Image (cartoon, rainbow, N blue to C red):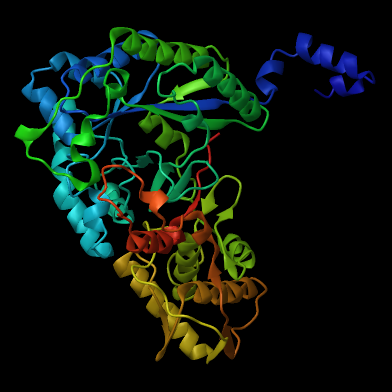
Length: 501
């Protein structure tokens, strides 16, 4: 390389680099990848031909060497077992298996039963109702489900702790309850591929005649992503939609919950219409595959690709001080290049460092994130004016906060300054200021001011509205301000997901 620097001509420089250096191509930056997460909500346990539709899709993808993720409903798995469709099970087993709720549209659906429950009771109820289906999918497909996605728009934030405890690392679905500008993100301790932009635009219209338009859109997305460092497209289908005249679960529309013997089997579409649907899918997938930087990924591959770089990272005292110095009254996540930190993680790191007396084992050798910390379970008290407390009280409050985090693995709804509660985001800004000053070797102040602050990551959570809960299976007028409020509290956990290079 030093010999090449002697050439004054840029053209000669490039020519010599390419022709002489055997490692020239290896030294070039890797081309930007476009990852395609292709997934199927495999849910219809009423219409028998939907079994064959799922098998056909899985077999086609296997023949093409394209991996996908099939999110299976518990009752669908049990139905395949009862129908002795080992051929369908075997076809899907060649791909990744996810979980798509126990009975999908039978009432109450997850958002319905969670809408009356607090954080802890909601987590327990999700486990009671949904774990049997999860276990059946694992038993029947002999794969631990890698991901979960809600039925329809029946989303609820209380699902995240149970999913994590079951070993699920990915929330994979589409809805608008929470999102990060269409990009993969961490929320509730899980990787979320959720509320994306590009994939929904590649979906078919009602008669599956928009193939050329979808190809054009895909090319545009591909060109944009490869020129901007790469990206991910999340694209979903339902095996049943390739063949039916209307969705199977309209049996349960608008809150209806008929017994099994009254379930209707809706007619199939005409043969030419069904073949047009499969043609749309196959041609679109083959078109995407033809682009050199496209890589199809499954749920487990996405989890590895976006593995959280903050986990296992040892944060030095100077690094924590730098993190603290970036804290603003608008409390936000921090993107630090190779990893990102949520507000909950920043508060955890600062409390870990400040609660450990100097000189104790490990206190000066670095801090790691010990566990997932969730957001508060209740709204915080309002702080409209700054509060001033002596250092002795502030230090005691830091230790109390640290104890709460250790025992509850959750941000408290309030941090107590003796008899006065303050919002955790205000306390975070105050503790960050102290930590940043400590880097300069200054002694603790005699008094600490806790000023009003705001959790800026709340802006990534949707407001409650009828449109947010527009799934036709819900009872007329269903919505849940309570679930949206819990979702805003969990915005403490939100941060970008970073690609491991």
